[in-house]
Image (cartoon, rainbow, N blue to C red):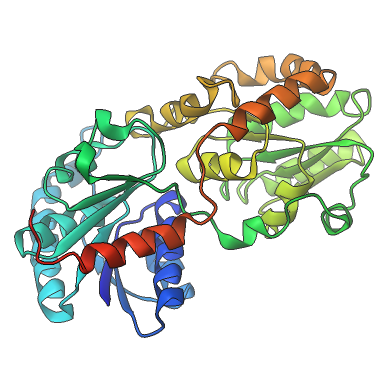
Length: 370
């Protein structure tokens, strides 16, 4: 099999793409995979680190504010379409897979015109404009949330979940290793706060507001604060004198962090929500207000509308987090109820391999009939 995987821009697109590539290689080590990304975006670093070749397109999005750079966008798009066509002619893929992002749009649009079989892997519960448009032309659409026929042709949809990093599944259920790794007390409830690799200012403010009550509530914290805030927050936590706060710029052993967690406080990116769904972790979701089409709020509502998580708006979170955490840690029945509701939410720990099998099935399904 020869496959092109296109897209990126954020970890929420890149890590599922790499997971799919790994599953394809696990299925058959003779498979050949080429990535196509956007120049200057994080996929140009992360994909080679994972051992795959990547070609960069000059494509970029339109700035929301007035900018001279927007005048270049049509020319960069045309250039990206030309490079996409040459890449497809040279590589001769059996299939082109799009995972979202600007590069995915250019590559898949070109592939559909060249008769190459195409598949979209949509991570979010509310798709972007590009995937809605592409859905009319591609052969297959793998989705992570139910009821996506509101946006896509029903006969093309396969509900297979969102690929999550394999290593995250290793640490569950709780183990002595997870407590030892973070120097935790197994007799105290643990909060895992995730602000992403760069940090989330609102979540960091929430955690600062919780510091004074940790002892009173018998809590301990694993807190990923982001590389941009680490130095400043380290001094503040040290000055506070609280010993049960394990502050890290970036958590390398996410499997052990999730394993130790009783409650997760997180943004609501597709990858984070999928990890919470798969690991069945009670969560307070604080969607970022700074993402296109308010994707994160819609991802969060896919859980909160079923009572399987708690939603806090970004503007309210720092003031409301203390009361909410106090209520949760004193009410084991509420936590148990959220866990029970999570059991009823679709998730798929084998998503990457199931998508790989779907790709194989599509290739073996005869000529492109789109």
